[in-house]
Image (tube, rainbow, N blue to C red; front, side, top):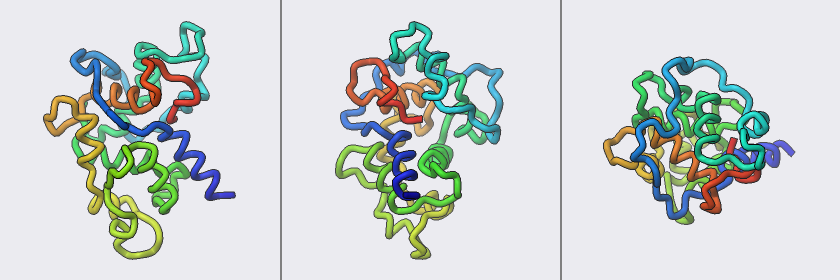
Length: 198
């Protein structure tokens, strides 16, 4: 039962693979950026997108377009949760930490093999490897701590898909657009509740 609940959280959070990932629209600097008034890292993220769907779906059409999603990302303060040094961009370590925290759906500070594999299947094209679970689990205890993950994971495959301008940092607009495209699993330009990852 616990494994199924955990897998459900991971699947909800990372429903869509990033197959054929092309970051369209990242040339607009303000796209999907949080405002300067946002709180910094360490504060609790508000309830999930699905919990607030009616609030974010301002047109009432039961889907979120890019503008509605942009506002939802701002309201959820997701980028600021990942941006530890508050410099309005994510380096590889911040991005990896953010991924670990998202994938740790039960917030127990470790990833089990089902959590890790479920997230890999949802975020990546088939055959993409961040590293085999057994090679990341250095102490062999059947779970990945954040330190094991950060020290041993190959973050480049997903980082490069978000880093549209290849400057080794993910700006707010790249992060938001990457999440939009990741959520929009059928590529129709809108996000339905069944596509929502958080």
